[in-house]
Amino acid sequence: MIIPPYLQPGDLVAIVATARKITPDECAPAASWLQSKGLRVRLGSSIGLADRQFAGTDAERLADLQQQLDDAEVRAVWCARGGYGTVRLIDELCWKGFDAAPKWLCGFSDITVLHAALQARGYASIHSAMPVNFKEEADIQLSFDSLLHALQGKPIQYSLQYLHWARGAQLEGTILGGNLSVLYSLLGSDTLPDFRGKILFLEDLDEYLYHLDRMMQALRRAGKLEGLAGLVVGGLTQMNDNAIGFGRTAEEIVFEAVSRYDYPVLFGFPAGHQPLNMALGMGMSLALQKTR
Image (cartoon, rainbow, N blue to C red; front, side, top):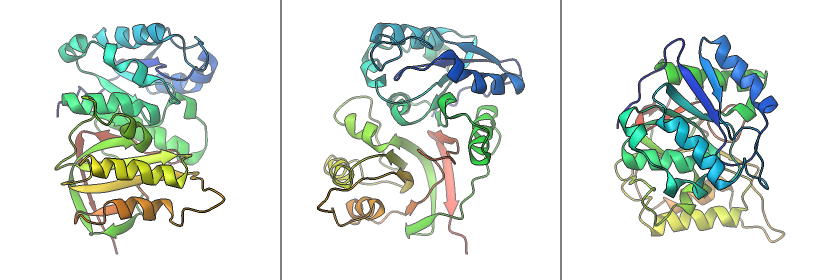
């Protein structure tokens, strides 16, 4: 994997909206926080635009993202929020400018579309909290501090007391993945990376349990759960059930889908749709070991 240059004081971070709309005022606290850390901030032209639920039309969001990817002065592109809409841009992106001057791409949820495309092209990126999430609460501040550390190339200290090892006691390898619903939507495309030999990270929000099972079974049938170095599961948050219950918890559904394999599986990693959403280097090495 190609690791973009780590940020130095005075480097420029561009904030863009590739999916749901967001206002400049909503981005202001996170932008001020970056500036307080010695970085410069540019709000992209998509911030403040609106077209239905999107941050402007597809063409407007694409133009903003493309501009920031092409600008060699921009050292990191931080997506303002998720929702839905990034997949509508991915096939029109040109990567020539990015290839000439790689930079960090940060965000999570719907931004998994971009993470997956970068993983497929051999670039690392950062699964992280986004400007829309910025608040003063302790866990949230810890999440944003971890993003800054990741951008600066500093080690991140993960709080792992809530990890549940469903199988195995240690894992090590390159971690790929992101939001399960988004990865499921990329099946059959050339922007879904090959997970074989890698650690797969999954997280999701607000899905019916039978939807979760359908997505896991689809990944299994497509061969995407075979030959992994391990499976790391973050937040499976606010899951729903029908009046006639599915009869399995979210964790049980995930584990059942990988029960035929023998690689390590752990739940409870502190990343995803939750206050403690620690930065995670996609395409970078991760080593975890069970503690007593």
